[in-house]
Image 1: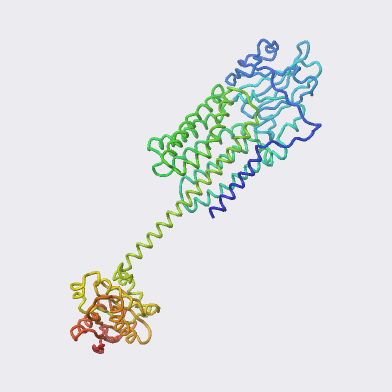
Image 2: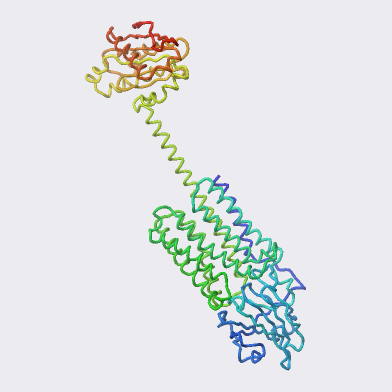
Length: 582
């Protein structure tokens, strides 16, 4: 089972690797052009397009991007598209904002302005991207100015582009299929989690299942794949990707705190890991909502509030690996790529540098890798727990067997016989023989206990001669005393044959004895109905008296009684003791 599980997950991982390989290039006469902003700026609410005509108000470099001011500005100069194509649409990364306005600046200073509210944007599948139509670009157009009110994200500005053909700006059909495949890869570990939880009932597995759901939500919204299946408001799409990421990261910390083996984390580290998980869900999750009231700082604080989580989880994994945790090695391998890519995303999100949105593709693959590797860790834990359980059950069965068996002879002991007495009577064992070796103390005294033990083992072998049948059960009552339960025809003859076999077996197996070691026996025969009114103590007492009579009559013989039972007179009666000597 383990081999099939690993093979399936590794096959899925190999297929997912195709996601980051470049698609083959084909000649495409209808390919689209994209144009990046030439300059950018930030201001208060009072500034309007007319105030931004002069180029002196702009920063025309790839630094100092600001999303913490009431208004962000982008400028696209005509020299970027001259001789290539005429742009018709604006698109950028989905993030919350209040409104976006466009002004085509023509020669002579004329402005042609259009504007859109947040929910008038059109999301499409190219990552979390939306688009707007822009004013017509003519030969007279010198620049396109873009005014973004209440921007909540630096990538909303840095990844803004103009394009001539929006239908070519989205993911290709092959890329969408690969994205769908990544999401599908996350579904299978979810089923594994549910299956493992039904078996193990461990909280950590349920936390991982919730984490998988959060990661699936993140990939659907962060990749824009959700737009293939549903048309959703841009505000909802803007919130869901960062919110699901914050929740998923927090659940990862809670999972780590509860999943690692006992002793893999110090008490302080475990508490810190749990606390940062709650912190991520509550605090980073709050800033992921991108409320307009928090626009000035929520983007920055969202990324900064994830830093403690990265630091604590890295420290927790390092500590657990150093303590020899097997689970921590799985998790460290799974989380190393995602932590590195998260740091890159954090730096890009804070505006330290500008990078293409295609970098997010690595995050999708890292997310799928993380979920699969953690599923392997859970599977490994499942098999380890099952192995421990099997070993514990085997040990328990061994202990139970030892508690029921005499360690010297291997026969059932008196304790086990007492527990099974009623069942034996119900199963038709109506003959009880109590056997004792004659003058056994003399053997121990003259030849030593080692020889005495050998004689007991040989006696057990002789008595077991009939136990290949299901109609006899042999017990060592203690010391040199044995008992045999029998059922079926000729019970007296069969048990007497066992008794007479004892001297021959001991003489054969034990060397150095100067006499035969005989045995005396007391036997009780009773009807099955008598067992309902006769206790084991009464049964044993009667057989013991017969055994004593056999000893008093010269030893090496059998004494037996056949009991009768009358329904109107509860006391058991006997036909009288009878003796058979060897």
